[in-house]
Image 1 (cartoon, helix red, strand yellow):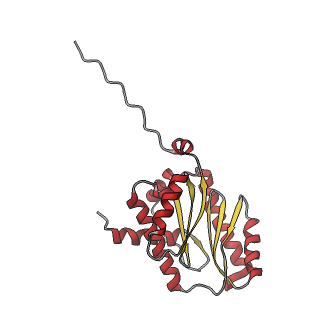
Image 2 (image 1 turned 45 degrees about the horizontal axis):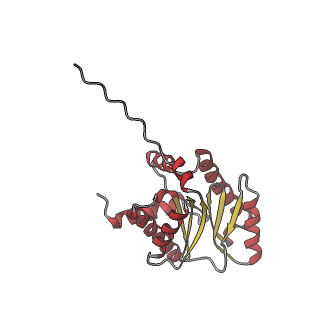
Image 3 (image 1 turned 120 degrees about the horizontal axis):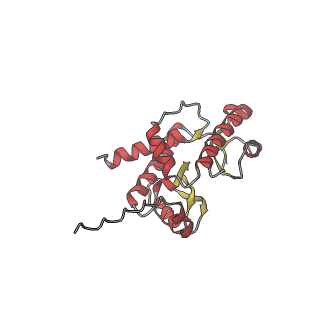
Length: 216
């Protein structure tokens, strides 16, 4: 059985590898079986999941082409709502990055959380990744919410929660996140759905075969 510390590390590693980060680091490959499980339990449609991946890749590429290395921008998309985090040197670049992303196909909304300041250090980014891993592990341990229904992003100690969840799940996830060491602030970038809609998104159990009548 995986120990808690190993699970936290594995979750943090996954969080660091999946984000569309303009840091120049090579991506880490994930097994196709694991990806299949994540897709199957995601509350977005398969089409929306593909669109989000495409949005992240296109936005990251266009930002890199336009502003190069003078900015550090993380692009995360959930159900075509884009969260921008990181640092830019001035307000003009902050607005420019948002304009670039707004022109990417299928983007329906942008939450611009870019800070006007110097780029974060490798130590700060490693700490953020560790915090993200702790939050995800705590959600798994909680067992009263679906951890995979949330995308967790941490930037300079602020943790962002993305996903399609009920108000009950949003409140519980916020409570869990605030209890994690290192989290300074929680920002919810969530799409709230009703409990009825949640039930419709859950996998339905196949009907059980009727019991055969006993032979005389």
